[in-house]
Image (cartoon, rainbow, N blue to C red; front, side, top):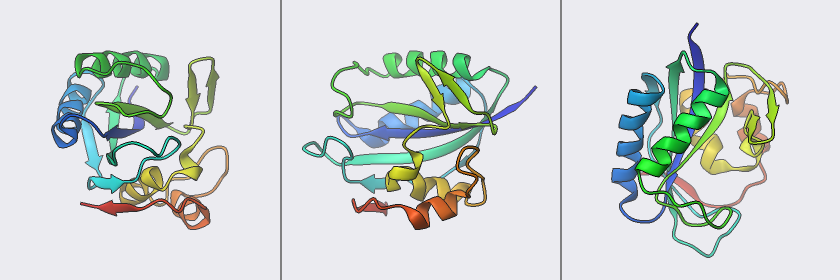
Length: 160
C-alpha cells in the first residue's frame, strides 16, 4: 500500500543548498518518489535563535514504508549526510522531520505524527501551504492554510 508522507528539510551550516539536494536524492533512494517540492525558503532560526539562518523545504513523497520505518530511514539519511545529534533546535547540517503520514495520528516515544510544532512554525507552514494548502491537519481539523493564517510566529521566512 502506498502512503503519502510530507517531510520538512532544513539545514543551516556547511552548504545548506547542497545538503537539501543531497537529502532529496537520499529520500528518493530510501523512502520513495518525491511528487511535490516547495520552493526553498530562507528562515530565521526558531527555538534557539542565536545561530545561522536556515534553508527549509517541504516535500511530499509516496512510500510503502510504515511511519516508524520512514523515521529509521530519515535517521540513516541524516547520518550519511553528516548530522551529529547535539543541542535541541541547534545548528545542523541537515534535519528531516515527518510532518504528516497519510492522515494518521501516531504517538510513540520517538515519533509524533502529525509533527507537534507544525502550527507554531511559519518555516514549516509557508512551504507546506505552497504544496498542500487544503490538506487537513488530522488533530486540529483545520487546513494548513488556516493554520498559517492563525499562526503567531513572527520570525522572517522568505522564498529564495
